[in-house]
Image (cartoon, rainbow, N blue to C red):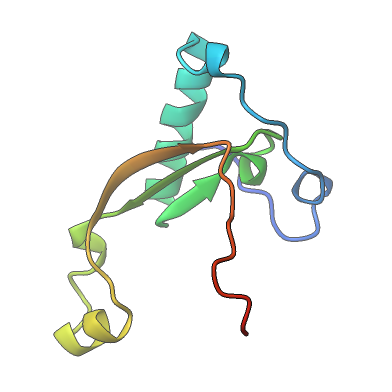
Length: 103
């Protein structure tokens, strides 16, 4: 089942997403959301999807960059984009740390 992906400007994308409590990670509803996000990301096709993009205001994202998505790209393009396969990952409550403030 593919979830609806909300576009720029939608209210859910303007809200600060709620942290995902550790106790709910293995709950069936959360696991189902993760699996549906994975299917939706693959169907799009894309390499990443955040829960707010599918209407869930949670600090949760999935990423995956499969080799078959790169099959049509030349070696030069792959090198230029520093693109390589990335296995499926679930990111929960991500934090961004700026290590170099220069633009």
